Length: 69
Image (cartoon, rainbow, N blue to C red; front, side, top):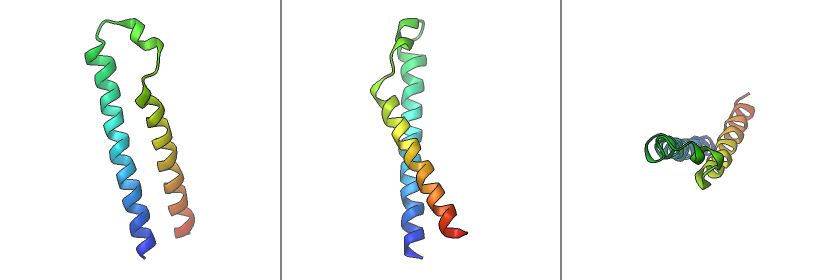
């Protein structure tokens, strides 16, 4: 039972970080670089972090579904 709680806590933490990175990315492209199409040419550093966090969340959710079945 404790392992499920830890797994759920890890997914919850990763999802919180994931949402913060999404919010910051949207702010960067829509507010900070408004009317600057050249900003779309490169991916900011947290875009790469966002991708790795998303993969970690997907892995943890898959692990939970395998453990419950």
